[in-house]
Length: 221
Image 1 (cartoon, rainbow, N blue to C red):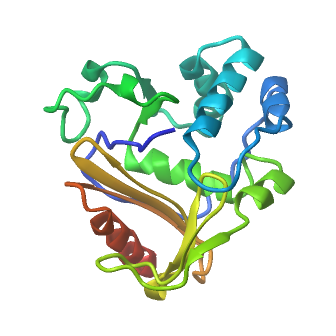
Image 2: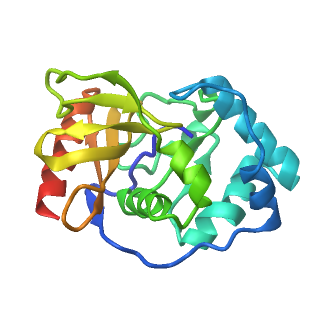
C-alpha cells in the first residue's frame, strides 16, 4: 500500500508489544500463494496482491484488510482512503485535492503510532509465518555508499521493504514514502540493545527529513 499519512502531528516509537495476531483461513491461503516478481518496489505485484486478497476473501480490499490485519493487530486508526475527502482530516489536510484513486493498489491513512505498531508486530513475527518473514527481509544490496542529506550508509531492498544501515543507528528495515505535500519514514532497528520501531512524518517532499528523525529517535529509544 502507499504511504501512511498521519492524523496527528507527532512521531512514535515502540518496543515489544507482545500480542500475537490470529490468522484466519483466508489469510493462510493468501500467505501461501506466490506472486511472481523480483525484490523491490514493483507496482504490478502490489496490484496482483490486492486482486488476490479480494478474490480469496470475496471482499473489497478495505474490509478484507480490516478483518485480516487492522482489527487483529488493534490498528484502530488505519483505514482505506478512496476519495479526496477522506484525506481532508489528515494532519496537513488535502489542499491539493489529491485523489487516492490515483494509487491503483490502494492508499491507507492512519496515525504514526499505528504505523509503528504494525511494523513492529511484523518484524516480531506476529503477522507472517517465519519462512515468509525471512524471505521478505532478505536484503538485496543496491548501494554501499552514503546518500547526501539522508542517514543511509548502505541501501538495499527486501520484498516491499527498504533495508540498509542508517549511520550510528544501525540496520534499519521499513520504508520511506512521500504523499501529497508530506513525507514519512517507518523503520525497525534490530541492532539496538533494545530493538525498537520508529515512525516520523513531516511536511514537504524531502524524505531525508523524516529518515534523519527516525535515526535520531532510534538512538534515544
